Image 1 (cartoon, rainbow, N blue to C red):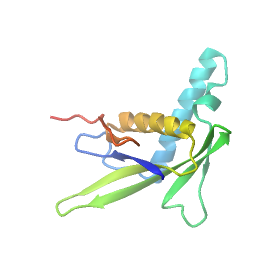
Image 2: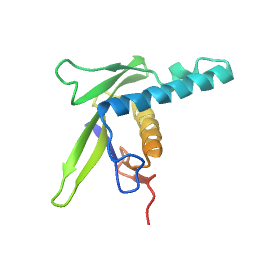
Image 3: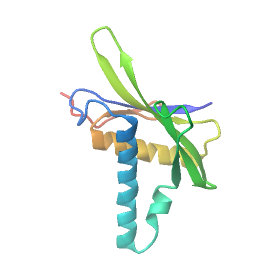
Image 4: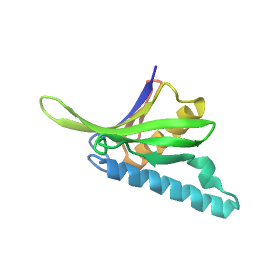
Length: 139
């Protein structure tokens, strides 16, 4: 059974919402930070920190994208954005899905990427196991 994590934008978040392009740019920024860390350490840390390539299925460019693993320990993670309409407001979120074929490495890397994104955007994160982490300022 697939698992999912939700990064929800709340009042006080750094941004009110994110597009797929914003999401992809943040992941590329994460990859660049890992590359710079690897340069300082003297080894190819970027490959270990982000062992995925971006893939988009034709016709589904507006729905989401897939991170396809390029190492046997990693297979795939799906990313998408959406909105939740209620009577009085509209809330935006990023959804991260681990397909049934995902490995434990995908789960661990998915948690790491979700925490990075939620921390960067100061958003509320619901992890794959249902627990919540609050990076947004709350009063």
